[in-house]
Length: 334
Image 1: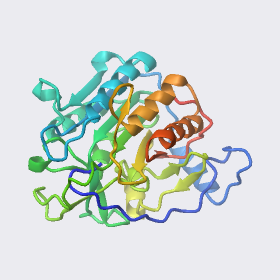
Image 2: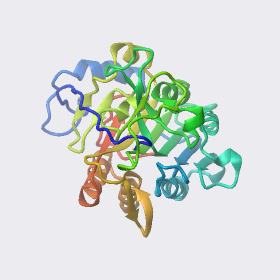
Image 3: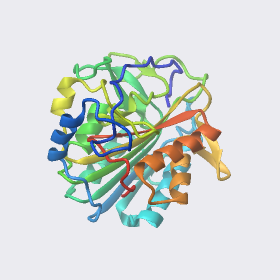
Image 4: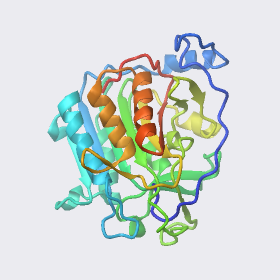
């Protein structure tokens, strides 16, 4: 989702598809990732999610700005209520940042978002379960440190991005992935796409020397928001992301258990949609609807069901990515 442009991103090549893990989907053969997967599995521990549960939900409508949206605040509030009710997150351990809040510390400014990310991961331990949800604008900016294959960093936009700038994927990783210990689960949901033809082509007011290219975030980009290495499609097949450079793959390897859900628009139609009688983001609504029907389905089933919901109502595609090979036959857990 993007504040200033509807320019489409070009596609980038992926590796040939491989099975989810070496004991993954029936009928699929290991086509080259087997030894790689076995090495990775020695490096991380799958979280049991039996420890502390903590969540950060961010929804930004950019009210009064020319790039205004309408469903993002509802997304964040709906997600927060759901995880409290369904997955045992304590209300005092759920931080909600929305730009309709009367409290200054709960407005999703860049400073508040950065502070909240630090709070989310502070003191995290093995088998803790952390949850991050973002609904708002996203886009691309020129990569300055050479760690992106395509030459661009992925970004999300705080409500005050015109003055303070965007938050780059490198910072998201440094704040929310790098500090996590082995066996700590982070589940992230990104509901980001562009907001229509009223937006300009660039964001020259942002305080960096390169224009921020704004467009719907492709599924091929979203894993890189957290620098995750593995991409799963609704048929359960695993792809190795080629957008993670060798340098980034080495520098940003993590023993933590990080899983990300995201969606990308197939067309230029508006991302704000109607669900349950209110404006919502399609990805957030699809994920909630699927989990309400079955909170304990497998990752493969969840991805398939979300994709089917989006396909029937919206022009978006769902995607699952992770920091390590995931057995998509495991039940969804937070």
